[in-house]
Image 1: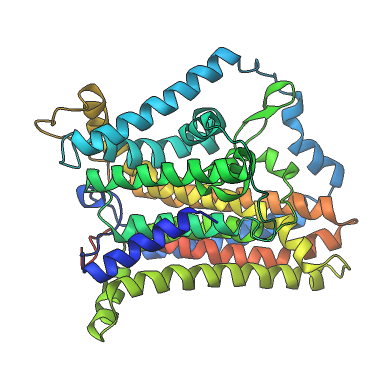
Image 2 (image 1 turned 120 degrees about the vertical axis):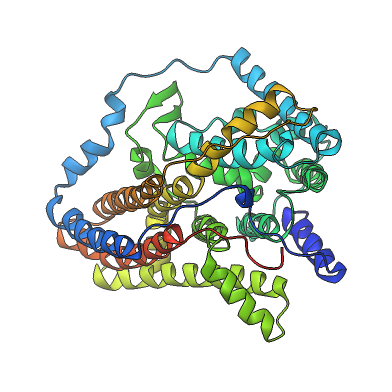
Length: 456
């Protein structure tokens, strides 16, 4: 089956044998990161433990929990999106895609002046992604690849192999992040444009082969990321149009399908965001120097860390799901419990994304605006914002908030799945432990000073 994974692996293989130097992470070389004291990170982790017990000890009324999550059903509804607005959104998505590709090839080749670089990393992956989980998921409308795929005639499509489930999207997501951190995509506009063109071709051909709905619901990693993040947003799509919900409240209604790869994709989203920040820390730079010093190729270190970290994150979650079956003393299978609780990890992923990328977005806003005003002319003197030192504390706050919201979602899931009081609370103990482990890693990464890793 055609998937982005094949493209990513092919590109990595070509880099390995061609000996192209590795480059890590975004435009981070243009940004000065602040340092957060380690004691503050540790203290915040202790606070998280205390709040965990508060959540699991005091809110035990099933009906009250349900009423809190259903507050959105009593908030004012929003008007439905009109067909004209949908068509305008689809056209805008395709126009932006074409403009990004054009400026990647023929625009200024300086990263801080190139519209493709700035739109993809700062405007889209940082800013637009935030809008998806903070406001609402507009990606089904503006997704240019879905719009293009829908225009391709499909005289006959093949049935998507259900045994694969979401696993191609898992490999695609991890491959995307790995390609981003080991190649100069954030410094080479033409390489970025080439990868976007290749991604477009693979996506359109794949959707034409297996059907647009099957491709974007199960295979395409970008569509799946935005779909999951959109479940956190206060604006939700309903049969009657749009509705307002409390933030993350809509997650209480999310049930992952019983098919392969669904839980691993949620864990992959959490790990991919963490890995993207990990590779910009001084600790990672020191570790890479050590392993390269004993003869390990740099690329092998990145691939091993990506795969190994994902395995640890997924193994820890599956272990927690199995233990939850024991602590809740239930006949419900560990696999079902794992699927039931998996969406509670999404607030942690979103909190870390916000912590990792908000300063990145704000810092590059001036140059993004300049590039939008004149996409084919180099910016004479690119200016970036310099954020105050205390801004780094917000990153810890976002990680903390994501963890607290994740605890609430897990608490809600426990009381929806199990009867009584003790079983729902006991079912959460293993997940609280694994969430604390995830969050501790995120807090440690956020607290580290940024650096440009070796072998770039």
